[in-house]
Length: 283
Image (cartoon, rainbow, N blue to C red; front, side):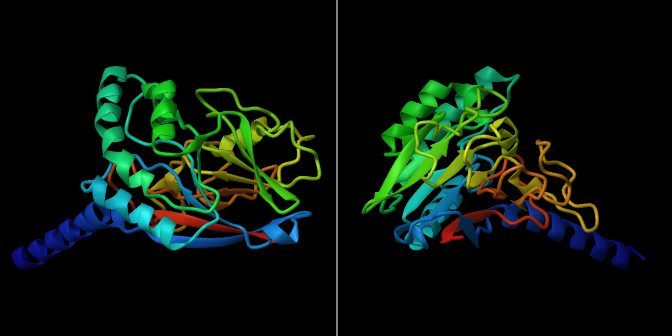
């Protein structure tokens, strides 16, 4: 009896150590194809590497996790790298502590993020945790890493005479989401991809706006995904327990949600962290 209980306790401890120490840093690639209407041949196969929810400090080896995320993104040789917000740890009701955590994390992230390489550079947006600290400070820091920050704005990428719009909207809970996805100035025939930290940002987009694809994070995929029950925690309404990540059927526009890189609480069950690689395809 005692031996059996001891073995059971060891199994439980081993399982706990696995989901706390190993799974949060076991980054994987996820590759998807995204069909885009009227995508010019010059952009067919255009590749976007997505890094979301870095949350530096959320794991026991944050430097190692960030270095691996950067390496995986670069190894994919993408045309563009996008970062979807939530760069460190914070809590809305603990602003002083949030400031300390961001002041500790951001300088440690600067050099690794400066190593990101893509033909069309790096584009970044803000998430809710960035507002818990100070969005202006986070924007300035992102710019110091070489990222182009979009807050309800659009970047236009050219290939010959063809163009592709990359819109970035503000955080859904802490800011104001532009109903045009930041791309109001673009001609309607120009395809566009919209970046939104929170998947619920799609609920603010105008039905009259052209939106070919939205890339979002925020949910961490639920972090814990249970058999039959799915993800109990999503922190957004457009995702349900069966769709805290991946293609979201309930969205009014094409929406893909990544499980992200980091975590706030170092725990992942059946929900691997990922670097998302999106390949645009002509529809």
